[in-house]
Length: 572
Image (cartoon, rainbow, N blue to C red; front, side):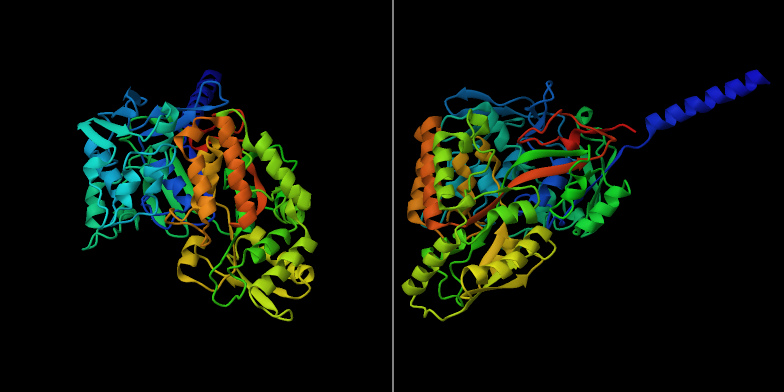
């Protein structure tokens, strides 16, 4: 009898071990706003990084390296790293096993179609520049995408060529590194698109496509496939049985909830229903000593865009007015007390800029000189007396009588608690600084700031937080989005001197001489400060709570890679 009981216990233990080994590994995370579409060609929203990262496929993919302290590139659709076969010509061999989630092959024709549609001048996709001119500049790619009837450019003249069914070649405008080529083809805009659905969604004049508007109008190709997508509720991914590199991924399912309110996220975290949480200013104090909390530097400088074309604001086009607003911002209070444990910033170039080129810009002699200039005005540029002087100049310049009270409109998403609190603080602060001449009112919206500005003229201030990964190599590129040549620019103030200096920084001569590049970037940042392209506010510091049940692929935060959550494992 004792032997039977012992045998039964052994069998039960074996079943438990087997059950544990076979238990589904489900990762639970969230987005603060839903993905508007799944078409990476025509959405500037970073929320798209999540579904495309899990369910899309690009030529290359970044993974943690063996040291667990950095990352490296591997071929995803590409069979191997790119090879420079002649000056500025890079050959990319493709994997014959690469395929869509439905099993149909991905080959050179897929790549050519995807890239041609991304650059299509009629579709005028918002993300075209991410292929033409990001980490590398492809010959005639931008010229093709922005061509006019007066200056046509043939597709055959673009530096993207099919050599055979599983080989393409890329020609760049200057000398680039292998890593830069890989980086160009990892961003979400360069993910492959499924031609049958892309074409099925095309309108009659081929100016738009419904590709990716719904889950049924999009095709997965990555390590996971999109099983369901309930708008503003949840995205669910499951393993793609046809994916060719399954060994790098450990989750069986991924549940991405759309959770707009921080209180709801905190509640789910406390219940164990989320494996990841990024605390905001109102919750960081609760978790600042939590051993699960990790932190990292950020590419982001939170800022405020200024409308220079508000028909109801008589000061709207004045640079003196812009300078007055710049100096009226108490960034110390906003960064530390409102944003919570962040760094005040009166400069624009972020704290990671230049880190892959040997010297971080902010720590360099030219970068430190710009910071010193800002701090001479006051802490991170805050100087109420100077703000009043510039406002007086703006009133005189624009012919506005001294007793005129101007009400500024600050437009923002009310669910963004840090910016909402900042707006409420400025509503009290600005009238005090400007002795009642400036008042502040709000216009709430739920769409993206970029979309809001496309349909509204009557606004003055708009919070934003654009960042550019290329700045880790080339610091000046953090200004890229504020050029008139960027189709989805978040601002409407442009300056010839600023754009000319950007072109100097962007020249191959300067890019290849890093000490000079630092000097030219400082000139660019000084022009920005002189013209106040927009108002820098807060240097972002990232804080994340990561569940104990996650085993990360890196031992510390890796810029450009993060914590590698997509590659984590679940250990119960």
